[in-house]
Image (cartoon, rainbow, N blue to C red; front, side):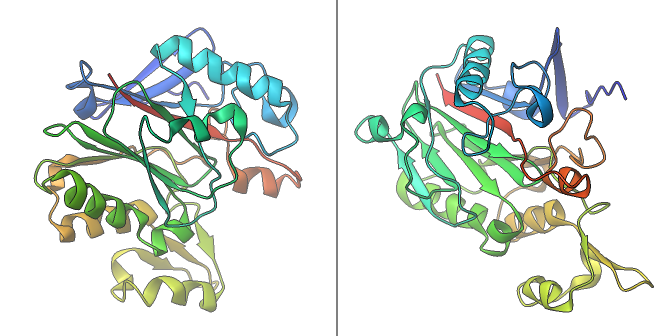
Length: 281
């Protein structure tokens, strides 16, 4: 499959083997914001990590992972990259010049955060995903950005809502101004289960299941996480037109995307991740 995802919402950039997407609604502010979601090709990792793997805690060589980060830094002209441990939590880190040195990616900080909020320039963050939702939240008026990791656990905890509310409370970000872009993730076509206990975790929060869950006769049901996230944000007060979904399924497009679920079906014991990078200029 030689995919090109460019459309009215997305620009798909290819430079040799390196591929990534940017969101057109954010590109309007490229004088203030750098961003990019990077697919799996164009790096130096080998085997199941081939080739642009950003997962430090897997069995891939850390040397290769840091080389992959350097490839992106060069492509986007990024500053130093910062990260803590992702843990499917709803913990939010305000990253600034006072605390950033603790979170230099090479130091492998074990504190657990799944959302980074930045209001200062030249601080780059990475969210790593392999089916989970990478979410960029940007307030162009106050020039505040968040980089958010929201898998099904983070979505149930509504980490994206908590991040928007923090931006509103601390920086005065108005819901009408905020832009939200959701990158490639497992879509409804592939996110399925037959466990009613699993399903109940969602219907306890969003009881109108006919809107986002499709039930099959064989007992399996399919859940639309990007839809739920978008509906939550609209209900909070964000403009519908300011919430953009990539509509790229990581499982269906496993030729260009790392997918945890796809690799597990291949009986692989480890997995690789893609990266979403943001930085204020």
